[in-house]
Length: 375
Image 1: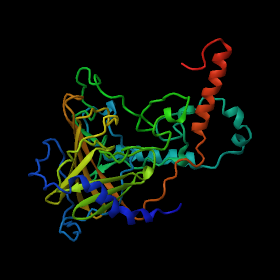
Image 2: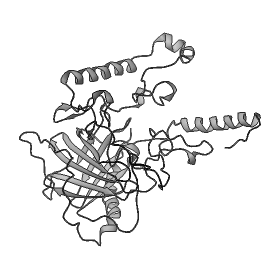
Image 3: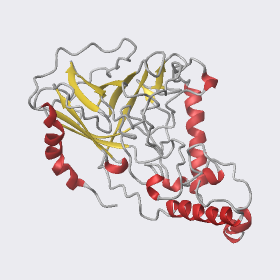
Image 4: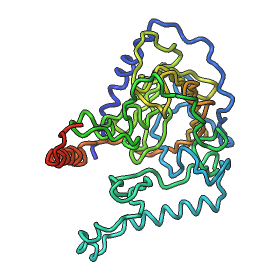
């Protein structure tokens, strides 16, 4: 795949443009302390991070958050956050066996009788997303959500969310959706089907227009392309996301913009708390759904290098219009040797063509039955 290293040459220009709303503003007032529930990193014994030119820890490099551990905890674990070593070995062993089955050469019998076999229900998780059969849009060859359980300070985790204690989203406040702008689908896994009259009516994921998807905040893994390149200066931190090549820019020691513009991905400012980079994001576009939150949602993130190849990430989400209490968690990015590669979304994408063609076929059937071709 062709490397897109040329984009890095333009990061400085992009950072200048994105920072322009704050150029005439003074640095932010004294930053607020971290929310009480946010996890504190465990720096490995004896480790001292490399320093950037301004003396702060150097977060630059390529990182990945690919993992089999889900964002929210399966109910079977209850309030248990940490897995035993035997449980980790079992989970990762099952993944290894599944990968071997999926990567094995297709049998001659299956190649010969594929049309008959294709009529039988498929109950195997061939796309590694939990979907089966026709709901599996990609087989395992195209997906890479991760093979390992997420570890924090060496301990396997049941979920990335650590509070509330059950590792799941808090209860919703009464009528959280009242008075809100309709949310645009921002992920191919969001479940919003849309209409099938025109491509513009389909979701952003189907159209290869991700807007603050895995880049966050909150930054989470997806089915594939879970790599991030951090580029750091004294005034900005740019996070280049492999998925759709989103570029998230954090303005350091600045105030939130006051010009009324609410960009996709929100307005992120950051500051250093000792050796930890703190990022606060508000002002999301009102048509952007952030885990179901509303326009007043605020996310706080903390990035800390804890080992040469590990970057601790803690997150806190607050929205009194949506949830009865804040929620958040932690995980550790793993270092990647290499570069972020081109993500080409449309090549060979016959799914959208099939969806629209199916819609036209449905129109014909409905018209022949005496109904209207359009709802």
